[in-house]
Image 1 (cartoon, rainbow, N blue to C red):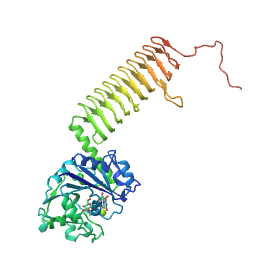
Image 2 (tube, rainbow, N blue to C red; image 1 turned 90 degrees about the vertical axis):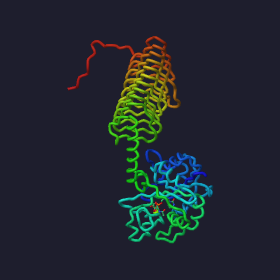
Image 3 (cartoon, rainbow, N blue to C red; image 1 turned 30 degrees about the horizontal axis):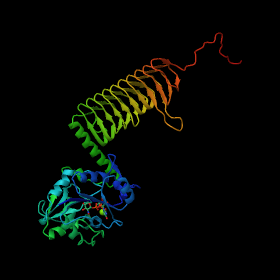
Image 4 (cartoon, rainbow, N blue to C red; image 1 turned 180 degrees about the vertical axis):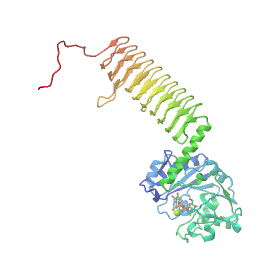
Length: 456
Ligand code: UD1
Ligand code: MG
């Protein structure tokens, strides 16, 4: 008995006022639909079918997870949408039906829905709401709060008494394949919207002696869908607050839990301290006793134990070792690998730089396509001239080398171990080990020279 998911994502999302299909709008850096698919994948579903329509090609091109696609060319209603996604569903399957624009439903909530399914029972996610406007209303026998569920009525079809019902349909259904396959065929479109309502499945199931078990989410936001950018922003904050809470519960100090954004995953050691406005993108790791100053951005970055990243630093696709000292205002572009005890100071940009233990690039430098061995000291304003206008070239600097301030190292070039480069030099040939190499013009003083004076 396999678990199968059908995710409805064919709708246009008019209220987003966007060229982008609604389900591709990102929440925490990932498309809304991607969140639903990932939650589905965590349930070990044997297949996930996504029903698409508006912007179908773009949706297929953007979503990277392995799913089966089904097309709904005309949006004739939620039941019609499900009918397009039935390929491969068999009588014995347990099928979960959900929406691609409801991103934050917990896997545990889906699991509860799946667990109640049998040949004589199905599951329905419902919630009592202060204001259920827009939601289908849950009809229960005898109009009581806990009587058996007998159907759902859509708001537009509801009588005044039914409108007053506070229990809303959240839209997620779990059901045995054989009931889904047989009952869907019986759904018509004779209603206020002229649509094939998936919600009619409930009444039909009851007529066939299938009991409908109501499952409730632990938190109301689990069932919130995104119809507008306002709702998207609201759910983004909910999600970020949840992640911040998990970090704090895991032992991370956050100076302000409302000012951290994680758009991907962040793993961490103990006693990490994060100041305000940190953004983590992709897969990031921060080791134990790492401190992060205000306004730092990390993308696929790994920060070793005991490293301090100071204010306004940006670190992308790079690995930093232990006890490093980075920033303020450091920019590490992709491909940097810093060993332990490395210092990258203010207004330093590095790219594809492999930097050895104890080396320092303290101020105002560009180090790109470079390999620095251990204990190298790069003076202020040093530039590795890696690009000749056509190709990139490498700079290799040996251990213990000292590069004077404002040096231009014209790659490809090698600086030997313990070599010293005089300040202001332009180095385009190998600088030998242990020696001072300097290209500076000799300093002269002109005796008797006089400053020009203004003509009268
Ligand atoms: C639906 C439910 C309602 C429930 C509400 C919860 C029906 C008839 N009504 O109403 O009881 O309270 O969700 O949010 O099911 N979609 C398609 N193809 C279609 C129509 C819809 O793929 O032809 C997709 C949409 O993209 C969306 C989802 O199905 O993701 C729900 O459609 P929507 O029109 O928003 O349903 P509601 O009218 O809100
Ligand atoms: Mg609708």
